[in-house]
Image (cartoon, rainbow, N blue to C red; front, side, top):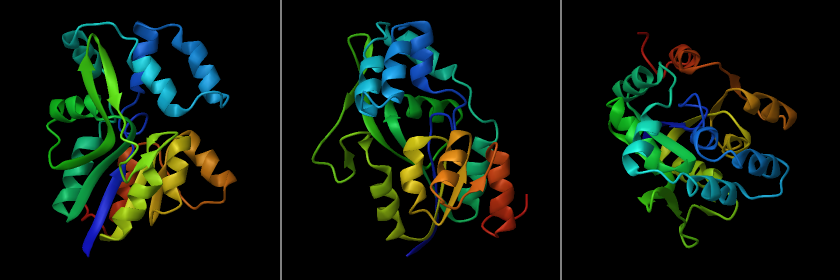
Length: 218
């Protein structure tokens, strides 16, 4: 068994803004009504995202520029480096798409991180998602089942930590050894009586990992 894994959601957790909001605000105002339907439970997550991502209608150069303009938590690069220095493996677990995640990791020179997400690719001025129903992590609602991923990692590591911010993250939180919760996830987990560490940013996450002895005091 490997020692420990640090697993983080991406949109709204590592990034300070969901990629779908960037698209809706710049190119697809109709997406606001779709967002309401999605939040009302009238659309599956994967259908909402697929519709928004395929409604950009911009050249790839512009899409990449928009991706690189997405702000991220400023403490993320240093925390990932410190986790790796202290023997932890880092995973990004996202029900979005790896297409934009890889661009942002490259921008901040974040290396040796395993991205587990829905496969995304550029085609005909939009971003499309390649969902494989036969994949062991497949979810009909999210494309990727985060709970399955965390349970699988539990068979490989002594300890698995997870950080997230919204409803999809409440499902893997059940299986993580320690969950760090931002924003709406705090109320969701509290209502479900699932234990968690409330955090505002990755500096708070690092402080807790130091206190628990996973990271040497920096």
